[in-house]
Image 1 (tube, one colour):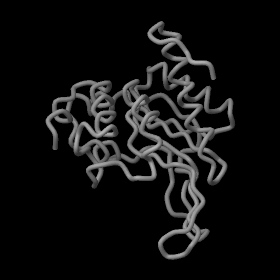
Image 2: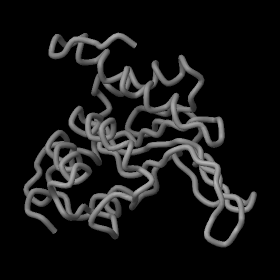
Image 3: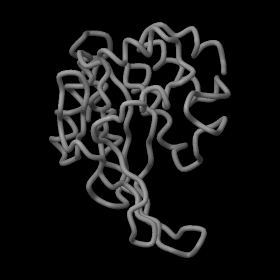
Length: 201
């Protein structure tokens, strides 16, 4: 595992490393069995990298899809993303507010916070059958499994203050609303903090 992960001491350092992995500057990441992101998420990398550099460490994401799987069965995905963010990060509040305003489903669970259902929400169907889910209350070992190669201090900070945040588009196959909403959420936070002007929505 690259030393940049082991040397990470803060949540923002882990997010910066994840952004570098997404953009191809690092060849591996904790909890993931491939050197590069899946091809289906290539067009999502710009917004995912921005989220990570702003403090939301995204560990899972997928575009909205409605296609045919390798076995000829129908494959359906809801656009979705999830990962870890500090409970006091202004981006957390802004993502929740922005996502709800456009009808997206939000799940945020961590110390002192419970938003949305405690169980994961179905995000992928294969031949009409449930396949994968996003969100819900994190399992006891989930953080360690997803960020196993990250420095101990950063993982302790996430264990104490981290929230597992997921945002899911309720509309199967749609791949536009979620990502533009997240882009706006980042811009609003930067504008509020005076570090970057908000783009015109």
